[in-house]
Image (cartoon, rainbow, N blue to C red; front, side):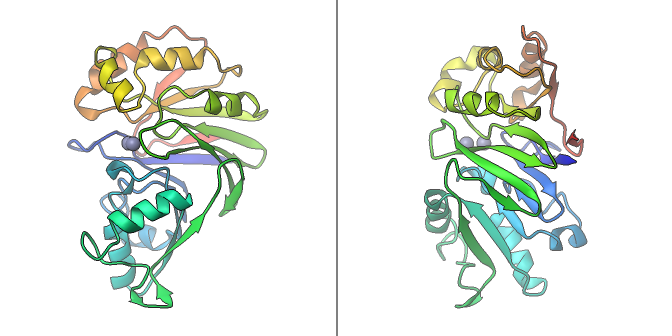
Length: 256
Ligand SMILES: [Zn+2]
Ligand SMILES: [Zn+2]
């Protein structure tokens, strides 16, 4: 069974709505937008792997505090899986001893709290029994979408992207696709902001879904929480043959 448990599934923080973090297994999360405030200490200690889609704040927000927790709570360690480019951005702009200490050198050189492991687009890698096929999507910085595979079933996960033929091509090539997680950030009236920040509106999503051959449920995430009602109303009016649902925090997406 392949499961994605959203700990945070919005494109920013507002009240109880939190930035992006998806628990794929007890040890493995996609993105670090909402970890510390959402998990108990025993759950946090099980984390061994964070798979990072890109360097934007809403996806890396808790990497500094998670590294501090892991070190200060008893010299625990974890691995950040991402591309070499994104790893360099995170190292240069967060763990630079200015914004936050360099936890690749703490508690000491040779005993890092954080280790980076690089993956390459198009080359599958496996973490805790889940295979990730990384796909380069189209965002304002290097950004990754995935096909997740486990026990013969797959889920497509868009990450942050605007319209992306490469992602759709990968979905259509995936025989055992059972569900899709797809970003939609802005309402249709803000199409210009969506275009310039390389995100999707409901109208864009409708055009993307028309090209996906398999009729599987679509879970929409990364909505801007301040405009949630408006975005969800427009998503409810989509003309598509696929069931479109809103991702909710702590409500698992299961493929099996
Ligand atoms: Zn984002
Ligand atoms: Zn982004």
